[in-house]
Length: 437
Image (cartoon, rainbow, N blue to C red; front, side, top):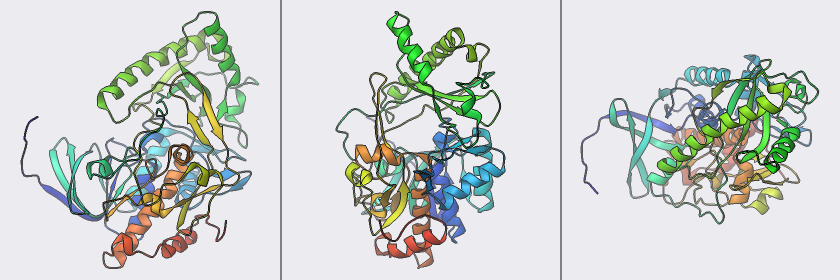
């Protein structure tokens, strides 16, 4: 151990500081800014989108359930912007949105710039300064060294609850091994015109295509003694460009918040990507001429930290669509549990779209912090449903609106905010929140 002390420059003071520029962060920052707050966003990459763009996690799931759209608000607005930019195709009836990651980056950047948000890219959250139950400054690291940024209200949308962790917020324990990580890659020169592959390019169809015939092939090859790495799916998704698909099939167990294990897993997954592509080129005619156009720069994390919040959303509440008086978001993805060992997956479908309470965004112990996106307060089963992009955007929108309303009311403590006002304004903005379950 060493002791280290120095004075840091304070490079900005803001009403709302959003840490993380993924789907939840984009929604939180833009919503807060459009409701009058002075907003800054910290993002570790040079671009926005988080796992959607850096991890090539395609499609954006999901807006509809049983043929009825249940997610609106900022997430739906963002989807429409992507479609207008020729960067996405909406699948019906499930409402998955296949997208081009580069156009996603551009649309997100444009929305953030138009909202007047101060953006700190290539900047990592390194630590924070807390006093009693208040978070005062976020310590960041970038090419300029260590710096401090302050916000009256802080929204943690890092995906891994990095701010909450550094602030000492208690985390929920895992009662079983965490879901595995994947390294998604993009292939060009795929023949998507054959009957078993053309489906990924058809509007109003199942664009997010689970290729059962390839799973059967891999299982057959493995039975014949061929070295087939651990895989999931496989799932193929359109990038909106002819002959180009994103491929989600690699997987390995990984502790996403341990740097050494992250590096180990990423190296293993990269090796496996090339092994998979070789198998596809050799055994599947549609892929005989394919080439790797890109490999996601970020390993896709399914599960890491989850905060202990004022309410822990349970799997039972999720599947039964328990209605909460402070419900601020919906979720319709199945409880989707990928097994860290082997190739299996467990799916449980809710009866109707679930509800997420605002209290699941409120961590214990830090009064001016909200957490949105993947690490909200949910048990492992509920988490397996809420972790997808459209729902993450909804929780981000709610957090950004709540923080902005507190600013409007003279920097009101979050605990004193009337959540019914947040819910009403979310409805006015297009969020689909029925008055009763």
